[in-house]
Length: 374
Ligand code: ATP
Image (tube, rainbow, N blue to C red; front, side, top):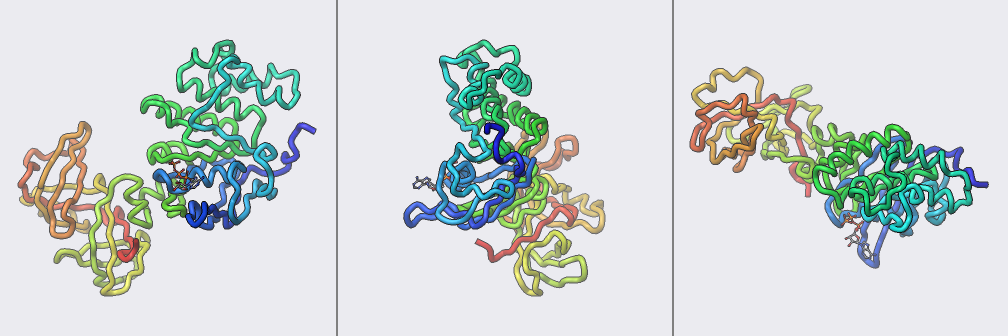
């Protein structure tokens, strides 16, 4: 009975109250999470946040302290790893050094007693674009190629879910980027669920449909890369995915779809839809705005700024040319170190340290956070 018993079950992963404690230390707090079948899902977070432990509980390599793991409609919580329809690719891909690439990939089939492996192995090698390398030994391949062998080896038994634990961690930056796109292509082609663990925000955003940002054993926010970037709900998420400026503001009034805020003597607009904080008149809101959303105008030209934009006055404290854009640090009464990135094509030569400026942006590019968080 080799065609697996789970063929009838889907490849979605459902964690219910899954928890991991080591003694009195809680590595993963009760976690509810559903990864839809066929999606590319990333668990993103800094070292120690519990992402690997979560992945290992899905794999069955770590026993949860509480909670259940479902794959499709099957409760696999009590099943050992080899009975789960999942496979894992690790950072240390540990290929068998004495076997050639073909035999490395064939290994999982042979272990199950399957004799005619040629067609399946060749298909798998095609998938990872290593058809020409079948008779080489692992040490004759580059790091990226070896990692692709590890992926082929993990996919040969047709798991419902592929788990990837920092699989690109050992590669240099350029190869990492290539492999990110390559893994994304492979996932689209095979169509199964990928759950990918990484501490690299760019990697998670490049590859995943959905990202769960983890912090101290909890999922802090879950969403598409664009949603997390544009609508972070905590300062942790805002800072983990890029850079953000924060302004502490007071709610002046709310009128329908707009919240009017006071900060440093001026007024700033925050669309209701972009706010995740309680907005009571007189209450505090933390206003976030990404550095690349801000325009910088010399104070002498302030009259040219269109109506309806949020504006803050300040003085350029520092500027650095970073190729495609210039990064400015602005002193202003509402945010001591405002960061602004201006595309060099739009750069005004008067924008040098000491210049008085107006920062302005479309209110739609603001997000409101709970100032009382953390
Ligand atoms: P990294 O990227 O460094 O692997 P991570 O986010 O994957 O980090 P985990 O490996 O899941 O984090 O670990 C979460 C926390 O649990 C860490 O603080 C870690 O020290 C702790 N931990 C992990 N394994 C054990 C263990 N066997 N015994 C005790 N504590 C552990």
